[in-house]
Length: 108
Image (tube, rainbow, N blue to C red):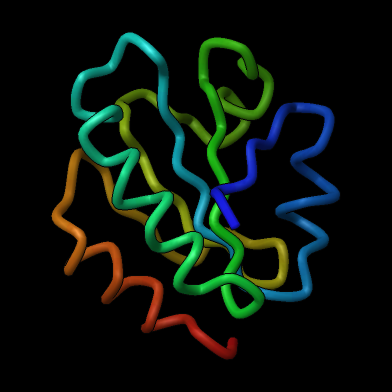
């Protein structure tokens, strides 16, 4: 199961109303660090499928959501639990850092 691609239109349903925690990767096609993190995001999406939702938001195509959450640097990863931002990472992080963040909120 690959990372879910969310949009301004699907964000509320897929992220805010999710019954499991969500990591949202805010990225853009032109962003080299975003492309570096991409394979890790896909790998973690497969690994945590059903326990933790991993989604991607293209900031260029979804400006409303990007502005709402003040995304000014990419990649930015936000973790949502029960519809609220509880944590995040800014910049390209190694898999271990991203995995640790996810595991911190597993089962919340």
